[in-house]
Image (cartoon, rainbow, N blue to C red; front, side):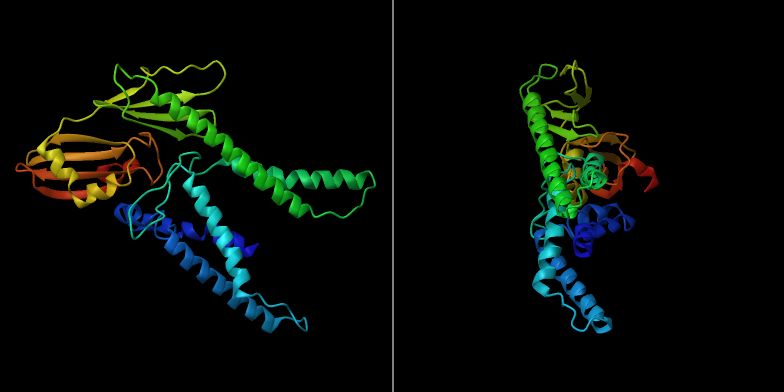
Length: 318
């Protein structure tokens, strides 16, 4: 149990790059300890650490011949915890970089929010129900021994996969609906359905040739979806300043992460400032994953400064 718990959360240590700064967070979060290569190294390191701890336990054990933990067993347990962690991150709305550091490519299925309270409740129920059944059995005189832990584990995993399956089905239904509608008379070029706290409500983003639109899609009874009832963001016109900004290192790094980048070009005394944020996140999103980039260019469209920042804190606070 200790090996599964530690290995199941160890990969999230790369989120500590938040304290280094937005640029480091963008580069290493969901990649440094979430890629396939780093996961194998992490599994081996954790397994070796638990084997070493077990050897120390054996030296101080009172039992005459305690059973030693073997490295293959420890590796299998640690690998299981890491695999489940990666699977849950892959189906979340943030995703992960499985091929890092060899390739920058984000994998995200957008089925679950980054933190899903319903999964926590499902696991709690899977533990509580067998215990309640056992208590009732004891009250009526049935004292047969049973492995309640195994029953709880089976129920928990069954509920988890069933719930993810429902989320996946609703996501497919949402994206199919979004892709087959017109928006303000324009055909969608790309659509995205992002999870919220409710499985029946999805945050939709649609890209057309002239705009990006934010909408809410609900599958609640009695609710209808109006493709023309959303927040419309006009895409900026092509310009030398925008092209120069998009070719900077900071912008390229951000654009590889952003799903629906929205640029805003503002003239300045020395040239222009281009800010790009990701409409995958609502404007009031307070998570550090809601990143943005600002690039200052000169009157001759030469980059002067480039900054990746946390959108929820604002550019002025960086």
